[in-house]
Image: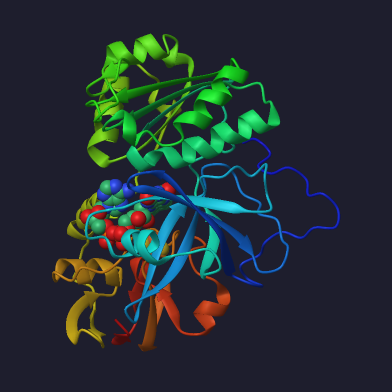
Length: 367
Ligand SMILES: Cc1cc2nc3c(=O)[nH]c(=O)nc-3n(C[C@H](O)[C@H](O)[C@H](O)COP(=O)(O)OP(=O)(O)OC[C@H]3O[C@@H](n4cnc5c(N)ncnc54)[C@H](O)[C@@H]3O)c2cc1C
Ligand code: FES
């Protein structure tokens, strides 16, 4: 593993969400018709320390509900006084649309993190060569890594391959063009499915193929590969690379779509519980606001039991990492094995991560 973070200049302190988790919006930038960047700074001058590719979990109060969502930091850790997230509008999505329609400079949000393993700081390449493949809003971790390599003038050989619907939907096109023009070890190629009105496309067209991959990065088998985008996109890229003989220990992916992530995790839990011998004790889990009650075996996470009973609750990583499923426990005992997605003072205040909390008594949850 590479050393993740550069030393701090003297006189500055790191941003520490344990001390002050409020981030103030400094600017909102329109990237494309449905993508905006939100730039944040701490309330007092602090510097952000993170690996490029990591994400923050934000807390939103929308229509009286507390909602948690993760956003990858699209900015580079080399410019530590601010950080930024770049958000795509998701049809009918409560948070992305609220950010686009209502969030303005001067407003603030609570955030925790940084978290996540999807970074070349954590999966370095022995050859110094990288292939970054993104679709849609999956561009954000790639942008953070590429911006940091450019700012630090690092000796990294980067091929940045991005798939967009049309040329008008390419995020960060100008900045990528400047970086690749001025630093020849950064090469950028885009793939578009269609033209945009008044904006024809002469580059790669359609969906990513092995031919495009070989044209953009003929030596892709020697590269550490990072892939982020919609789940079908990642599955297609993974299949192409595997079929083409990439050593899959060099393959790293991150999904932004929690339902598909959870489906995988759910299948694992299902297999594990199916193999479980004799029946475990079962407890009653009451969701106070929605007045739903589910039965949960003592060796099953509460989120999983709720899902099986047909409840749709917010979740993302399902591993106690991201904080999306954080919920207030009104009463009862749980055993929780988290991976940093909740802070001690939140636990002390009665919060739990339901994706990694198993009941030890009947439990009431404020949801
Ligand atoms: C680790 C991590 C990092 C993330 N980083 C980013 C980021 O940098 N930029 C960003 O825009 N989003 C990112 N997301 C997704 C983000 O957390 C929200 O899910 C997204 O903004 C939609 O929130 P919502 O409340 O509007 O809709 P939701 O209620 O969360 O989603 C509505 C529906 O859209 C699907 N969906 C969610 N996100 C997307 C998407 N990006 N594209 C297509 N369908 C989607 C959901 O599965 C659901 O079916 C990230 C998610 C994770 C887990
Ligand atoms: S879903 Fe990520 S911490 Fe629970």
